[in-house]
Structure formats: structure tokens, C-alpha cells
Length: 447
Ligand code: SF4
Image (tube, rainbow, N blue to C red; front, side):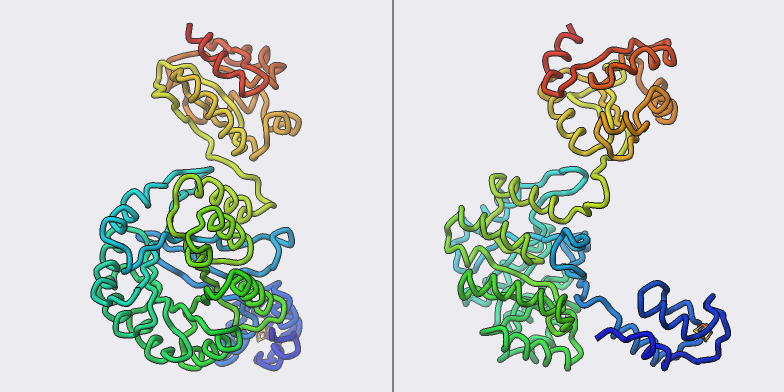
């Protein structure tokens, strides 16, 4: 339970020295309890008091760092059950699975073609962050597969309850800092030792929630709080119930034993049914899988999942923007015409998609419009003749591009006269009102 103001006050020096900017230690304590001021603002707190207050006032769900290749991701740290309450913090990550029971050709395909999905959408890289390596009973092959998985440059999740196999595989790919998913009620002590020695996150599972809870308590008593909870693969129903109960216990009941991110293996839960796997991966992306393990990640699955993830894990209070700048399309260069629009991500993707479809080389100019769409930006004064001229100046467009044709969005045709007057060396042209008209428009412009 988070400490109240009075509890915090008891731990302060009670000298009312005012160095924290507050008239009294009591006033400071009340602000710390409400989160209005950092505890560190008082330079006179004892180490013991800092430790007690920090521990009790920490977020109910821990943030766990995991390494996926060269990238460090955060898992957990969530503060709300529903995205509309505030925002979700750490996006769901995905893992593509291989197993020692698979034949070599299939494993090779999964580690090459199976990891080909890798693209950018609104500034976010969409790819499978992890390879999940399952030990089907062949310990030597498990170590070999761990090495092959690490060689892909993705993060690695090692899945085995065999402590010796885990130790050997973790040692073999130590530099990859794999997640060791294998602790349970029977082996938690030895498995925790392996994870701690290797500096790895430890995955914990249980026959049911009670057993999982008890095992986490024992691991915490050993000093290991670098954990991720496996919701199990007994059935879809139990996996879903576990995921929801764990999150509710942590966030609603403030029960920190369950205050960890979770891992869900939908590859096993779906039993080889591709459509079901996609549906389950979507379900656990929303509720509440921190890592979702799939059998493979093709574009058919990825386009749906990553689009869903980006929507769910985007802060609704912040507009989705792309960086202002020059985006050459269809090998556009300094001799290609310019089409200007706003930095609202959806506008960028629709317009750039249609311009690419036209196959006409051009430069898409993205101006800073606060993340608004064309008409909203115009109405808010973020897209105007002045803002367009300012963009042309700030980004030194006239030094970088020789072509002097500038296409305005058709919806702000009203700006043409003013822009033309301010940019007399340019041929200002009004484009189509809808992006879908850009293909025909650009072809005619080129002719
Ligand atoms: S700096 Fe610390 S001791 Fe001084 S008034 Fe603030 S809380 Fe009290």
C-alpha cells in the first residue's frame, strides 16, 4: 500500500528547514503522497526513509527492461486497466517460435523467411522483436537453437523447465541477455540462480494462479524481482482469466506480487489454427499480454496485429505526427515537383501512398501543422500562406530543390493567391481535394 502523507511525515527530519521549497515537512509530505513533488527535493531524508517511501509509493506494476537485439524495450509499468482511462505505457512485443522438435529445414525457414516482416509505420518499426526457443526435450539441440536465434539479431526467449538446459543455453548466448522462461514451483530456486547469475529476466509459471502467486512470493524473498509472469497454456479460457486476474490484482488491489508483465503463448493455445492464432494474438494484445508468442509472423498477421498495437498503445492525448521535412518519393530529386501537406500521420500515409501509386518522381513536403489534418490545421491557423513560406525558408527548400512547382492540397485552394504572391518564383498549383485524385493529377502534371 502507498504511504499516506502522515506516514511520510513520520519519516522526515521534521526540522521545517524549507530547503525543499515548502514551509513545513508536513506540507512536503502531503505533496509527496499526492505525487506533486519528488521525494528527492528534500536533501535531508535518511537512506532508510527514502527506501521505505520509494518502495511503498512505486507504481503497482514494475517496469522490466528486456533486450531485443540492440534495442532495449520496457515491459509493464502500466497504471490503468483501460486505455481510455489514461494511456497504456509499454507496448506488447511479439515472438516467433521455434522448437527442438521441429525438423531443421522448418527451423531454417522460420529463422529466415519467417522473420522477413520488418517495416515502418508512422515512425515505428514493425517486426517480431523476439524468437521464442522451446525445448522439446533435446538439450543439446536447445543450445544450438538458442545460438541460431541469437544470430538473427532479435531478442531471445528460452523456454524450458530443465535447469541444466537453461543454464547451458543462457551461457551460450549470454551477450543477448535472453529472457529465461522456465521457473515454476519445483525449480524456482535453481532457475532464479541461473537468471540472476546471467543477469536475465526470469519467466515464472504455475499450475494455477495460487501456485504462481506463491512462487513469485518465494522468488521475491530470494531477492529476484526481475520477473515476467507466464499465464500458462492449459486452455484459452484459463490463459485469458489469468491475464486479466493478474492485471486486476496488480492495478486494482495494488497487490505487488502480481505487479509484473506477462507472457502469453498463443502458438500453443491456438493448436496450429492460424486464424485462431491471429484472433488470440489480437485479444492478448489488448488484454494484457506484454509478450505474445506466435507460431510465425507473416504479413497477413502482422498488418492486423501491428495496426491494432499501434492504436492501442498510442497516447490518445498526443496527436500522431510524422517529422516535418522533405520526403522524396518514386526516386524524386532536386528536379522533381513538390507537393506540400501537413504532418498528421494519417494524412502523410494516405498522400504518400497515392503519390507512390502515381509513379511520378516528386518531393512530398511535410510542414509542421501541430499534427492536425489539412482542414483542421487551416482552421486553427497552423496551415497558412505564412506557415508554408516559413517551412520553405526554414528547410532551405530553394537551395535543395531546383524545380519550382509547388502543389497545394486541394482543400486549401483558397491559399493559392497568397502563397503565389509570397513565392513569386514558384508555380503554385492546386492539387485535388481528395488524395485519391493524386494519381491522375500527378500524371497530368508530368505530361
Ligand atoms: S527540506 Fe526536508 S527537512 Fe527541510 S522542510 Fe523540506 S521536508 Fe522538511
